Amino acid sequence: MVLAQGSDACFKDPQVQALIEQSKEIDECFASDQNKCLIEKMTVEEQREFNAQRLIPFDRSKNALFDQAVGVVTANFSVAGHRSSADATGQLISRCHVLTSAHLFYRETSERVSGVELPPKAESDHFNIRFHFGQTCDANLASHHTQGHILFRMTRDKQDFACRWGCDERHFYGKSDAVILKLKDYDKRNRQFFNVRSTPVSIPQVGSRVSCWGFPGYNNQIKLPKALSDQLLWYQLNAKIFPGSNARGILTNSIAYPGMSGGGCALATAPQELIGIYADSSSATGHAVIMAPAQTADARNLNFLTPLDHLAERYRAATGKRIEDLDKECD
Image 1 (spheres, rainbow, N blue to C red):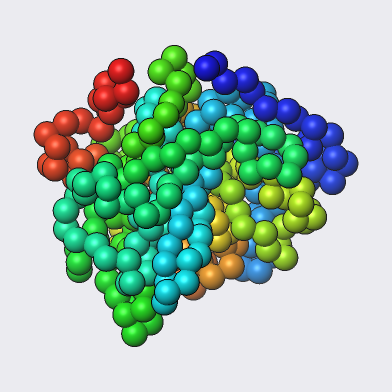
Image 2: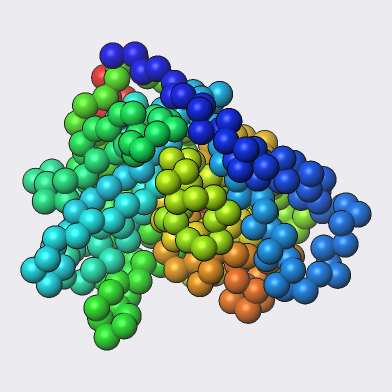
């Protein structure tokens, strides 16, 4: 089946158009470190509010890659004897593989894990994993969905995560907060998927621009009605990544609301190559300040990305294969 791109009806809504136009008006403030917007004179709260205007709905009907390769990953759980569900953002990194966050599946300590990085397929059957994709602009989550299972994970105790909250939850370190899913049904003719950056990203002091995206859960910071917001992929142009090391991952001032976990980021110079995905334990509100060196990351509410070079290294150690060659497994 050849997939058709989605409708753009929801983008005709004047509320959506207003957000998009408002963001365009301040493009020049974010496109370069040299601008006349006096961001350095803003307070922390003013920077965070100004930055939040950059996260806007993205019309996937005009972009086949985002329409077919970016979607929502859903999973089911049994916690304290009750069934519940959760979701995160995911994106195709081959015709039949999806990259998303590990904490979607393994945050709850009631969910058993081991250091086995290539678990048996049946081990993830109870999650009922589904990848939903394709813009709809209606009440449906997506126009298409397919089932999948966990192919590769990083779940070594104390190396990839630690306990918190009295050991009721696992906290995944940013460098390890990723899993690769293998899809059951997929279009072998579909060539719309992202490449994965398998080498470390060199981050200069200035000029490092990324674009990031995801499906946020509804919150009072989103200036659209819930029924409309839930239909949309949200996108931020010209966020920054910052040099410096942090156990939680690559530091970024990109907005990261809950639900955007697993959402991707790509350098402006290579828009089809993922350099990272939103990691666990970003800032409490998701609103990052615009200017924030690494040493002030916590005080200034920076967010974090899982770097994909670490994933590529672990995948090759476990399988003897390169992550860039995943698509060969889809023939």
